[in-house]
Image 1: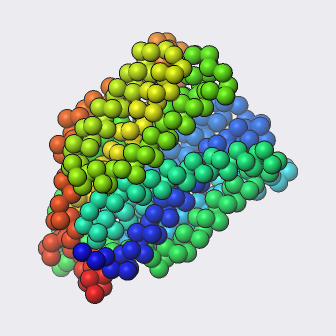
Image 2: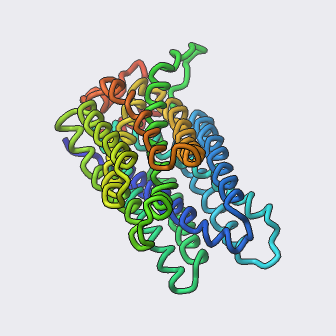
Image 3: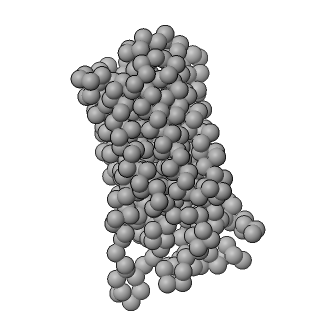
Length: 411
């Protein structure tokens, strides 16, 4: 089946949006030590800022849902990218301009959270729409672009710090990339909008059970992600007494495993089915978390962190894919709701593991993500197979805007 050029352009644009998101987020989080020093804030202040970003990101996801129903997910994604551009530039100004009040710096992070949530939700909405046009799984490729760009962002921060231009260059680069993607996306993102009731007829209710099931899957996966991202280096260096050069390798191995898994996910789900891929990936990550918890040796922990990344790599794109297929005509609304569980998992992994570290110990605390992943093994059968029916909506569920867009693409 030949893919129409507009659909290919949409795929490129959505992939670029995921890459811009990964680049910007990595630059922000890896610059936190610099922000801490220049703004004179302590660890508690950093934690509160991270919490602020999670809360405003959840609000940004809700905002994306509202915009998607009003003007389509294309507008929701462009607005999210625009907010990120403004926030990144405001962070640069608040850090580099002498005498700038601290509240400006904090407000910039609040604004960044709004953009972050908007791009997370809008990008997933667009990704599912374009995937439907393709008729096969391609979400893994989007998330692979996110991970690859995140790695590049971390390297950019390291390089700029070595060159003495920390913060200014990487943040400006991330803002420029997001701006370019937003401008390109205005004409390339999929124009489809959510179905609108005709003649006052009420729409069918949202599949709430499915939203909660796939939302829990997202929560479990992002608990793993937040736990490893926040605590892997601390655990290796402070608890296992690994040398400073070895400690970051746990996180590096974790990100490498995510990238490799995401590059393979689309092909694997097409060959073996989504449910089998989810089962295998989840079981692998459970084993990885258990290895970290029960084998207190640096080499074992690094291997365990790598294994833990497999579920994050495969399950997240497949969860958004399957959630969007619950009610294709209302996929924007469903994805916006499922995306909210992302931030709950982020807080759970970062905060709860830190609290557990004072009692049973940080190593044993990594059993928490493993426990949360266990129910995913039983939810795996709910992941829809990548059938051709996902490639097009029925005439009853397709909105006029979607029908026009699909007809244009078919031509």
